[in-house]
Image 1 (cartoon, rainbow, N blue to C red):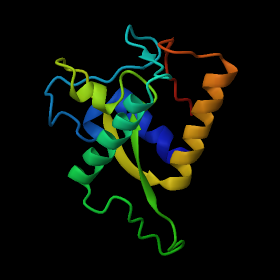
Image 2 (cartoon, rainbow, N blue to C red):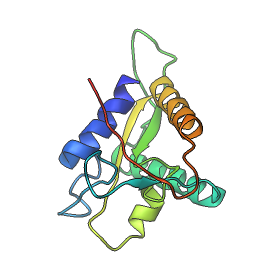
Image 3 (spheres, rainbow, N blue to C red):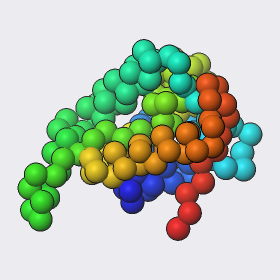
Length: 145
C-alpha cells in the first residue's frame, strides 16, 4: 500500500505535491490530518454520494493524466493504475463534496498501482468495521513510517 500511503501523506503534509495542489484554490488545505480540528466524517448511507465522489476523482485524474490507467511497467506489463483520492470517497469530504464546497478545502488525486489502491481500500473498510465507524462519525488519518 506504499503508493496509497504516500498520496495521503503528501495530501495532508504538503498539498503542492498532489493534484490539483494549489491550482484550483491558492490557499488549499485537506482535512483528516491527526492533531488538527478538521476530521473526516464517514459517508455510509448515501451510495450516490460515494459514487459521485469516485466519479469526480476519476474526472480529476483524467484532467491531469490523460491515460492515468497506463502503468507502463516493463517488469509487469499487465499492471494497471487506479485513480486514488484523498479524502476517501467514503467521506463527506470526498472529491465531489469538496468541489461543491465554497471554501479552501481541497482534495488530492493521483494514479497509483491498482493493487495498492485496492489493498488500502480494504484496510479502510476493515478499520470502519473494527472501530465501529458509522454514518457521519469523525475520524483522523495518521501515516506512520
